[in-house]
Amino acid sequence: MRFILIFILLFSCFICEANYQPKDGDIIFQSSQSSQSKAVEQATNSPYSHMGIIFIKNGKPYVFEAGSKVVYTPLTSFIERGKNGEYVIKRLKDHNLSLKETNKLKLVAKTFENKPYDIWFGWNDNYIYCSELVWKIYNRALKLEIGQLQNIKDFNLSSAPVKQKLKARYGDKIPFQETVISPVAMFNSPLLITVDQHWSP
Image (tube, rainbow, N blue to C red; front, side, top):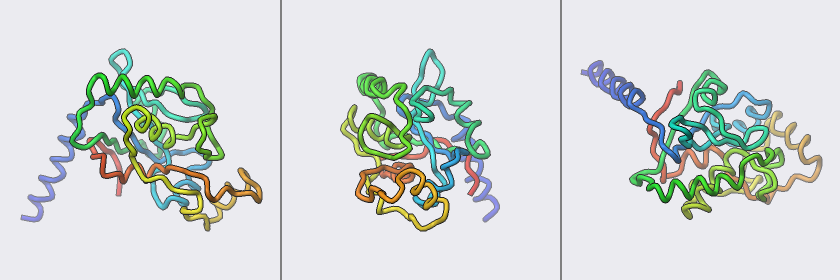
């Protein structure tokens, strides 16, 4: 009986992934292979160090993301670039975005396009990091707060990679009170549900 139940669960997951159709506003999470990924993952106690929001352009799915700057990246390229090609995709729970709402998301997204990446994780709009980008798009377009805002002091700052990055970015003047939003805070938001994933435990 246990074998049958496991088989049914695995088969159900396969069907879910096989039937996934990207929609405007879907949010994708991955483990980045960038130089700061390890520090982000250790500071937030999470495997998710990068994310973006999916938009359909000319019939094809793209990830609007903050990399070296804020750009549209084909969904397949975004996935391939992540660690082991693993990812999790979520969308709003119990809410199908209307055309008006997706247009609002895209209009707000346009205000961030080509902005440089924020290595200091500041909360102003001059520079933008990945989770800040997605959080602000949803908040400004639809007045939603996906994930709880925190301060830098709230994270685990004890590991060597984290200390190294903090020293390199801030010297001895770490802005412990700076408002931040992490990928895992958005991942854990009760406003979202998982619609597709390829992730090893």
